Image (cartoon, rainbow, N blue to C red; front, side, top):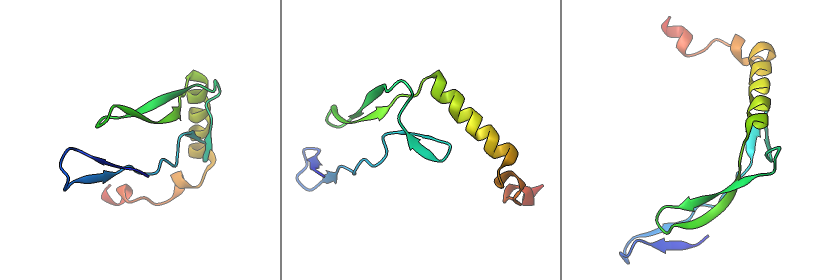
Length: 87
């Protein structure tokens, strides 16, 4: 982790550790099907921070399918929810 200054010697901002650079689909962090990535840029320095998986249509289809399965067959849609208490 490095420290960057905005020109004021009293103000230092530590760069956070980048933990997650993959897509989160079906409860797992996965690479994109295509393997494509894109750079994430630090707006303060305009330097690349890391590369992140770039989701395409196939990745979106997998995520939607996983979400539909979780909604139809998972436990959470049948749990009593906070918002239901307002109805």
